[in-house]
Length: 263
Image 1 (tube, rainbow, N blue to C red):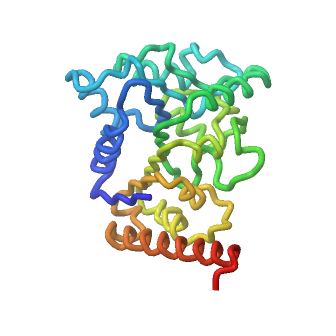
Image 2 (image 1 turned 120 degrees about the vertical axis):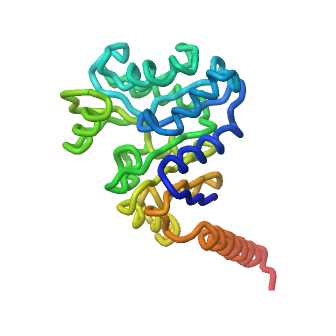
Image 3 (image 1 turned 90 degrees about the vertical axis):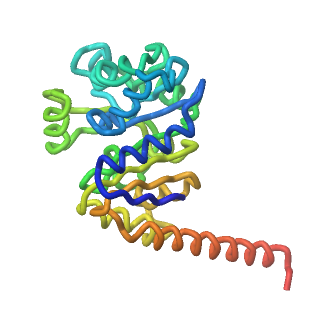
């Protein structure tokens, strides 16, 4: 686990891009929240592509959510918004872009298969002000895999204001298991209203069912926060991470010795 504190939102998204650069290679699989649109992250990744630094033609992109009961080629789909404002500008081969769809139950199984066949190298998530990852705060059977949910009034407003997507009722989204199975998780938290949720990553009981605290089960979780969302200083938290890792090693060794009957 890594914990990175930056002075501002732009600095956070610059650092996210710096970390992503380590994984940009032929055949990589990325999954980005649509909330990266208009950020310093999307600006840099597009600018540096235009400058010839990276080619994204052979990288696979997996969407995290989509509006239900529409064709993703319609203008009012999240896929089309991302394609127009992000993938097209990166020169991505459209056959390498996959988004969930829901017009029948078969579509859910279809996207689960796509996720299984394309292990994600980096999933980039943005924490909302309710402490949700995507649409959920706690791990439940219904949100472990690709699933459908009715969006809140706040999410309706966000989709309309940020992406001009109107009259949305239901969304299909990937699940918790799909996120934690990614090889690397980038979690972005911005603003003082996220501080208590960031704190839960480090303070919540290991048996907690809160998604944000369970993300630490992925050894390659990187948390990016601005100063307002920061739980403690970068130095303090990284020291805490090392101490907890050490305690865990000692506990696992003790259990092993008990199993082997070592005195």
